[in-house]
Length: 114
Length: 112
Image (cartoon, rainbow over all chains, first blue to last red; front, side):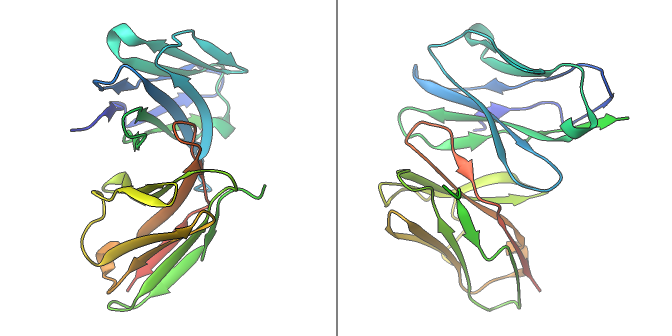
């Protein structure tokens, strides 16, 4: 069963628009970790953020922000004032404390047009 | 640290040949992952190791695939014999258990 669902396959925005990427996860563990990764057109996978299940505080890093809500099993990612360089595939991932296997969602392709 | 190092970056081989992909994890990391990425199936976890021991190889497609981690600083993924459907980008990643994984640049494999 898929543990991480990224329902949005592709999102296209114009530069300076905000874009929110949805991530819904499924787990029975009480201790788990959530991640976001970026894969630009060059192909490498770049780590963006890690949250553990006991820390529901939202986080902001520059133009990036993350909203973690255990009540809805969601860990959404917002890019504020998007730029062309934000064009990439973004992956949400889950790791459970019982085995630490890192499982990825299908990814959301973000295209930012100038 | 140079990060996770994979070799080769690109590999083109003929169907039926043996292919070996190599990975050097970040020094000190105790978990290592092998992923395969294709357009159709996305990022698939093939196998992962903790402290050099394979923990879960349920993602390995079939017996043609094998992976080893003889020590903490080296892992291989072998495909024998290779088939065109094995064409993909293969990523290696390493981490401390439960922490964020750092990925190598990937090996783009083409089997013709």
